[in-house]
Length: 473
Image (tube, rainbow, N blue to C red):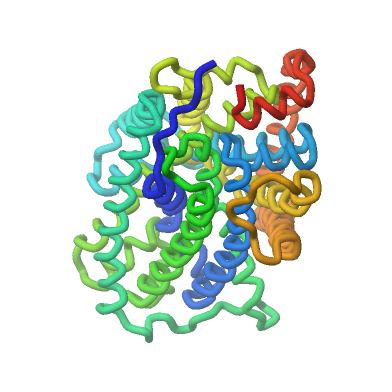
């Protein structure tokens, strides 16, 4: 086995995290947020959810700095609660990573068709109310393969690609955010909140808040790559970058939502397929800013997909190294240091799911908020337990009020986890939702994967497994 390459610096970690968070989903989801909570209610819910995720990010800052190895929360939870709980967390997070890549690839083809009407080619078939077209499918498949190829060539090149795409996206976003803030009107934010039948504004804001773990989930891709940091990258600085990424992404969503809410009366965009982009066409009567929003979304698609490809392959590699899954995924490319088997496996899953189209992938993505909330919950609980079990371990960054803050973050994550499942039930008309069926199916597959690796796991003593998980020879 060769080592993962050590070449990532602070700038790359920030772009991997921020680029892995801010994609295109908010452009599509903005109308749902506004319909649930109104524009100001949406901003408040995003900021409150962002503050909660900041508490989680602070926990990751201490844990990542203390255990700077591939695997992130899988390593923390394994050290704190054992391999079974760690596998539960890792397998849940793998569901998110598995769904993100085809979802992003399919959305890229959709965005290109919006930018260039008629681009999608002839209709092949329809499933769950969504059409699958030839050119769109080929673009989705091509992008999935390209992500794998980029990752296969090594983390340094993939990180440079992430840098250019992330900062390009930020520059483009300044155009439409500025247009909204300086060309819009505060009167378009009326009414600022949406009240329930009982007159309360809280249910709508909670409906927005429960989506925040999913929309901010890219920050926990950063610890997955800590083992590939350059020698000059301080673990303390990288831990704090996790927190900075959460704050920056939450601020981006809130400012963008507020700016677009000012562009045109927000009720007029609720029925639009791309409400964030449509607002500018309604306000200015031309396509310029609409296309600016969509191009920023395309840049976001590229960064989210690249970040998910990098983090997902490292997660699978770390789980293999700990013998939670087959040891085959531990194999690294002798020159680039990339986890080649994990990359190919994720690519294969992505290719297969691309054929389902948006109608098939969206329910899987909907489970993502619950999956990442579960990972956050156990990761946060790991912090006080590891302070007890491993008190002498160097901690370049120590969370002030550590145990109390960690328990508060875990409680918030558990609340969001329960709220996510409740929201699935509500959205399904208070009947058994498809998302729950996906969770059950993924859990059953996980049981099979865990049992299949039992023999390889038995060949390692707990001490050997702990040493290997920490990247030690």
